[in-house]
Length: 165
Image (cartoon, rainbow, N blue to C red; front, side):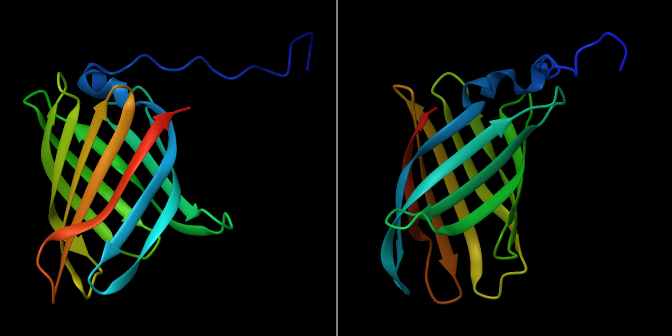
């Protein structure tokens, strides 16, 4: 290389106007959650969520969880959030279990709430429906995931409280 530095990280791209209403989600969030369901034992977990963007009209989403006591990995998923100007949102999520979700819903930028309902849960023999509600209150991100299976109606499965780091 001639007289130059090795190169620094590129400047972050400008925020696309389509994702501006959800820009409060951007960044890294960490905290703890708890899960349960009639067919499993209750459990607690650590979690990290990352919302990022590339300048396109979409937010990249990634999530990972781990056992609190050992740090052993538990679950991971990633996908994309596509907010629309009319307050609707489309979300696709691929889970490490092989399950894929297509979610549609709404966002309320003023109250910082995103509500999602599954349109499709793919590659799932037992799971029939998943809903997700994300809220930011006093700088903390909380969510509730509800699930229905072939033998259970829609009911709470996961909830967590995360802080931006």
